[in-house]
Length: 440
Image (tube, rainbow, N blue to C red; front, side):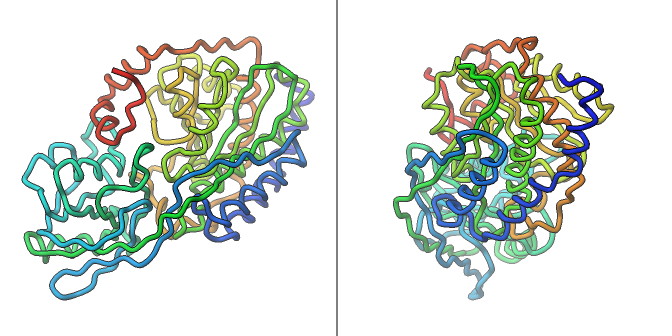
């Protein structure tokens, strides 16, 4: 850790830095950064070049993936068209069936006769429900129930149809057509067409594609690494400023600040900005499966930072990770909440399931669900540079804590991860989506 005499320098440098903000602006101005596209590659190259100014061995690591290219989509009911967008990796096709509104789309809501029907579920969950339900979980409950198509209704006002991928690692293209509709369109469909025939059509292409992870490093030449991570890709309908241009900007800010504090690092730090997170954590899974788990001390993953001033982080049951956050929060007298629960929906997860200590750091917004995320309203103008800078100070200090020889971070055996998932009732959902990571 730095001394009071040197704190003044790196903190001042971080609070006046524009390098992350400039990269964020570059990323959002690229346009479409969908996984496997030229835009995603341009984002990866811009990130590599930015990291190269502050860290060593900046490079791209390519990997193959299932591509998906959006075409037209539509809903027809009552002889009228209704606006929608396809969910990435939806199956192409046109189907019709009786329309059923399942409300929140809780698991028990699918215990009905849904064979051949078009079902709709909301993007949020009730406040009393015991855990978050991911879009893919609702989709695959619909698949298991024999539904002909899936309609995903946003809970956020503003005529904003939500996006978000379906598909599994083993079967990247989903089994039935899937579309997103705005809260307003969903409300109209439920009011006027419940029990009537509704048609859903999705057009798309599914070419082979290539994505890239970006790597750079600094610090001592230890075999063990601390990974500081984010994802570069974004959904094609939006700028991807909050999700996750800001996270990648944060990685760059930490690279700049840690370069000033390199002498304090006891463990090598590797910066990894992944491709293809939005279509199933493909880039992070590719990397996690290629490294020795014993060579990764911890993962510090940024997904959703910058949306607000105060930070929180899932710590996945590691008390030591929570204590490190509390140390940093106390040192700077700044809010930063450790959340001891499991959060299996970002790029830290392929490491955590291998027993590696991992954070998912995000900004507290007070919003229910994703807010503007996964809609065309995820735009640059909603972020503020001061939030990015303040968070970068806290997260730089946390990275130094993680890299310290004084912090011992034990691995968790599979049994402990399974116990956490069982306690928080994730097992059923992960099994239905094909994401259960452990052998029986």
